[in-house]
Amino acid sequence: MAACRFVGQELARDGASLEEALEALRRTSRLVCRVDPSYDDVAALLVAWSDTTLAYLHQISCEEPMTGLASSAHVRSRLAELFRGQFREAAHTRLGDWYCLVVLDLPHDRHGLVAARNGLSITRSLRMARLGEAARTVFNGAETIGRISPNRVVVIADRDERLGQRVRLLRHLVEGVELDGHACRIWIEGLPGTDAGAMMLLDELARP
Image (cartoon, rainbow, N blue to C red):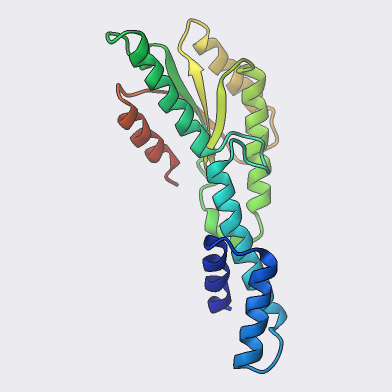
């Protein structure tokens, strides 16, 4: 089964279709074992191929299909775009004076691999989708709201006089959201002075 998972990942990375991957498994099994592949071998290849393909789609897509939240790649792209705009406008301004990150975190929901093994990854995505809905209710303008890790959602928010009030309202809303007993932490994260620094901050926030 481990070999089938590896082959499924490699074929997906090479751009092979699912039909091609299954046919390759069938030919190999018949050649080596002289029988069709077992159910477990087929399932292992299918899961590995699907997971690898989905991970690639998440990298190039603006939204996660399960949660409707912006992908991590899109959050990074949006921040980079804002930094480029800053330098076009005025050299003496700092992006952190105008924007910040509002972070929603489920600190006790970090163990993605354990959850995946126990069939809980869909449940986690539903929790993230609920957090995203609460964030959209409060930040209902042009803000980018995305998922940057299995247990964290961020909002690229305007740093204006309403920010504190919005965060307090978001905390109040989240208290009423069904998160399967998981407590949510919400805080404001300031932006560094450079694009590179902002990417490092996102890397740090994306860690489990």
